[in-house]
Length: 166
Image (cartoon, rainbow, N blue to C red):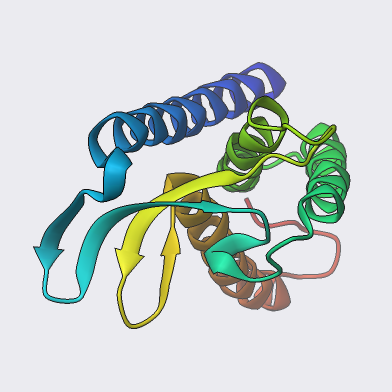
């Protein structure tokens, strides 16, 4: 079971990082110079750089955000080490992969010191925010984790004392 869990963890993190970094590289190459690609009337691909949190909040606080992301990654790694359920480990891995994707930007794009780099964002929901693939995995992973916990918490409540759901 542990081997299967760690295989899932590795695959999910690798896929999330690849999708995130490749999509950001594509955005930099195709959307630089102010080029905007309209997908729908309220959805565009528009290159921006974000020094704050997800969805453009907390601009100008890159090092603080980077430090918080490192702490979050450490917490998720700890949870993965003690996690016994492969499905939950895969969900946590998607969140970790997204967090690492944005952390890579903060480190590799830093000009003013460690963690001061901006995150590449390019998916622009014009009435809401601009974000990237890593943000989608973090947010969707958190939503799926909450739904998973709610679903399995109700299952566990129906089990006799001492039994655990899978």
